[in-house]
Length: 344
Image 1 (cartoon, one colour):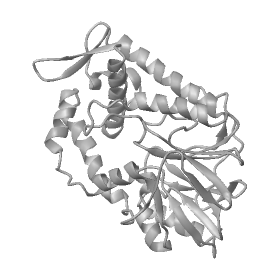
Image 2 (cartoon, rainbow, N blue to C red):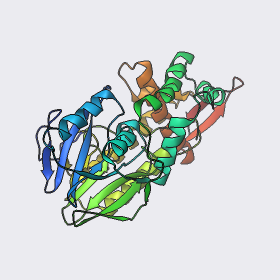
Image 3 (cartoon, rainbow, N blue to C red):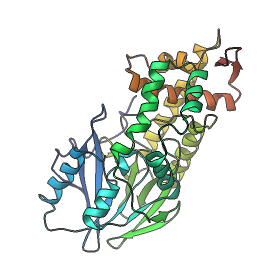
Image 4 (cartoon, rainbow, N blue to C red):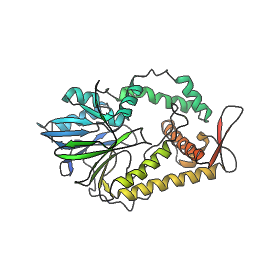
């Protein structure tokens, strides 16, 4: 995806165990992730006598060690005051319980994200197994890949350390005050359900979480718990709202990748990217109806392992639901109960 219109004020990220002042009163460091996307960005915002934590990292030994290296190194003797978690994905909420216990931190989080974390962490692994398997079968996914995708849910508890039993709910439009500065909460869907971002107008800062990232498109997927949901429509709508609400001249501080300038240009690129994907899907199923699983190679022309195929499948289905809702595709269910899509 072309990101040539973006500029990057900092050419390279901090090394693991290092911390940068990325803007006045804002510190940035990284924690290791055991995935192809091998890091998550953590930001500390200057607060009254300490630092507010924005996101936490995975509940893994590597991420705990990363926090220990920061708190016993560059921030030795300094205090953490509170934490704000943007959404329920484990690389963002994973150490919330550990940080709350270790440093006495209160948690602020959108309600939907907090409750979805509880469902993901504490629901029985077999609670919806039969129904979810049928969802994947009906959309053409192989049994072996389905086993891997369903196994990801069992991993959630192992990648998180829980959340405090009470929390401070944050809503779209709230003002959060830290260090004498106001940060406006803007929530958006698509990648998550009610992901929180923060806009600090006077400092021209925008903490984008995973809603807007420079070099990759955030995963936008349909999940079996909401099989007919339209997360891509929500995502595109909320990107347009973000473009209207946040000025172009902010420094974007994303959950992954490098900070950058060019928010509106990046939103335009992401919008165009999904439009191109819809065109490719329409071309792929113009001559004959295809399942979501059969359309995965249309959008992902590289070799995928079973784990990656699960994410790709959810993303394809998000485009199919979006296009069906717009009348660009029709759904056909065969005698085998498998759903196929045809371009109109």
